Length: 397
Image (cartoon, rainbow, N blue to C red; front, top):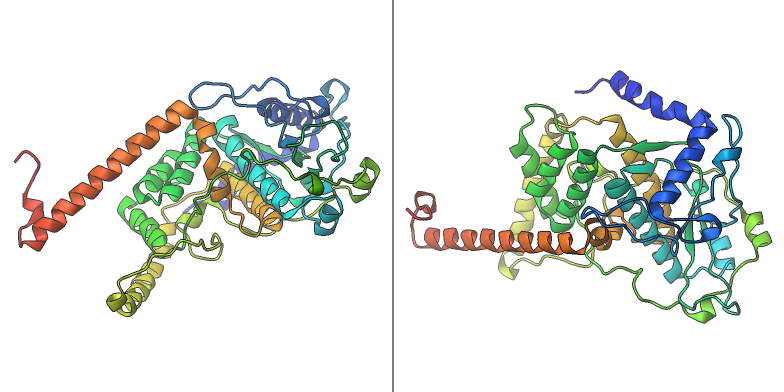
């Protein structure tokens, strides 16, 4: 129950910044600084920190953006470094530039990784990653003296629209991603609460049941996979590249990304699902058909609760821009890699966001809590099997 005029009032300030090029130059400079991107595609000091307080690594090996000359820019004039590239959604031009299938998977993961950093660490993100604002810079040709493991870089353009997040919003987004990866309904609901997207008095148990149902029915599922940005070495035979003049003729122009998933799909219906994974759950052979029928009935009951559950959610302007960014990013990502989804692509890089020590400590804590929960469930099941009321027994009683 949220007024559209409230959303409009929240968004107005962000949208009007786009008509002042000084703001865009500042946004471009901040984006470059937080990713450690210097002029000419060289590394630069990184101004952003991981959640354990350590400097994040420069992204110069997989990301680039034009350098903004703020001292030469004005309200009506923006001066930036010339960075030619191939439009990220142009299959033919990418092929002509020697961008392989493996390269495209790498680039799609780069896109997800970049937005995980923007949301969770920088708390500042480009709201407009449509195909006209994303390019691909091919690596140097194999005859050059550059290192053999160079890969194509994703190029970000246009920072007229950018948005900031509060620390609790950024932390909530990260926790929601982790909740989806871990299929943890309780964690997701805690994340929603931290994000501030639940109305006062929301029935948290109903929200929790809906999230759990979406996990159990496979409506929401993240693919667990290793990073594709690890220690691979680029095959020399696939490293052909277009010349700068050829790349500039391809150019980057306007375009709209295809619709994709947004943060609320974890509790919404199935219109924007992540693609199915290769992992399946197999029931006992003798009960398979009956279980399927029961699950269908349960799904119908759950679907009837969708409108009521959605009434517990509100959408602050910042999350409207987050949803927009993820939707446009999803369109570009799937164009590069048909199996792309933001959560799965970003999940291997959560350790970078948290820092190794903090990540390992929290993962160990989650594993311990999971084991304790499974032990309690096993004990409850054992009591019930022998006819005891498990609820009447308490630890230490």
